[in-house]
Image (cartoon, rainbow, N blue to C red):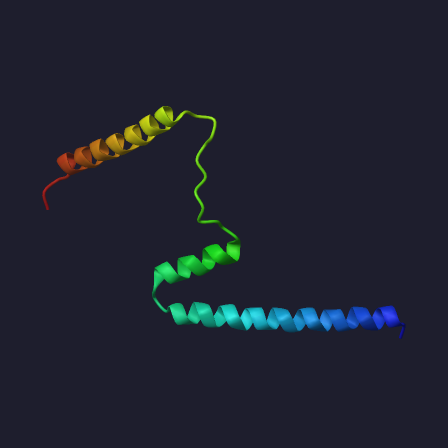
Length: 90
């Protein structure tokens, strides 16, 4: 065997050991969550590389952004009120 091939095989072994360690680590983390959906969601987001950082658009003025938020919540309240009004009594 050449030296380069041996170095390659050693690195493959190191990577495989590391992957086994990661698999065991995250399997234990998932199992420890049990039925706790919040913890499971947190682990899933971490594994998928999702950031919890919210980035707001910088191309809109503060006033326009505030108006957009306001419109969203006003519409949401109107929708909820409408749904409650339209519900059949049970």
